[in-house]
Image 1 (cartoon, helix red, strand yellow):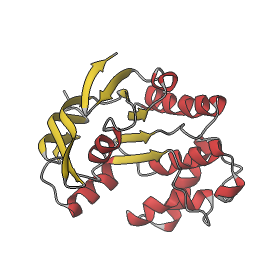
Image 2 (cartoon, rainbow, N blue to C red):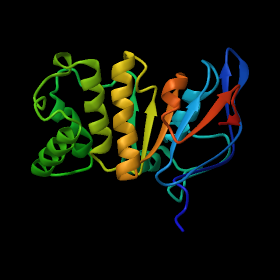
Image 3 (cartoon, rainbow, N blue to C red):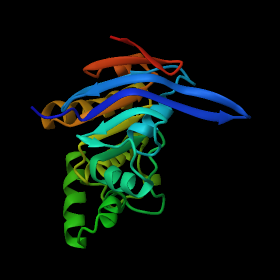
Image 4 (cartoon, rainbow, N blue to C red):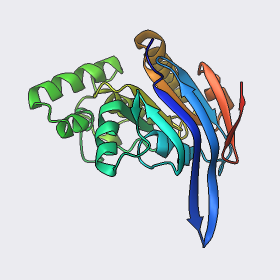
Length: 227
């Protein structure tokens, strides 16, 4: 039996703010298995961004343990975290984070450049995944020539091009109307159900969270309720 993709025990995170210690995460325990689709909901200030940053190896916990795909993340330095992050995790953000003067296919290629993939293979992989996202006729369009939904599909393609173990989606529908939001969720659900991709979704929208297989609520730094 394979180990969980995410296994967290007793996670605490503290910040100093205006000379006062803030207890951002309070004893988080979480297991996410392969091919799971978990949504985490919570109000502003609940600790969602802090949790996402730690899960994405962008920050470190202060107490507890974190294993990602069987690898102990807890005491890794910044270089090791970067290597693990680039190999194991794909990110999708509310603001897309596309390079504004770079075409769709070049945006998707970018992570493969850092991975040392050849130019020919980069183009082939980027084109194939954009085709899967329904953007075969938008390969050379700039972000400002794409709708919000199309830009997010480019961002999803970029997140998937490295074939990550885990997709972290932080408010991926936050800037979209209802119809476009559901189109993006259709894509995420298909990736999970048909391709077995493990997804952890952060959202404040209950109707978006309902599309996931499991839902947790984060409040005041605690995962207090599973639905």
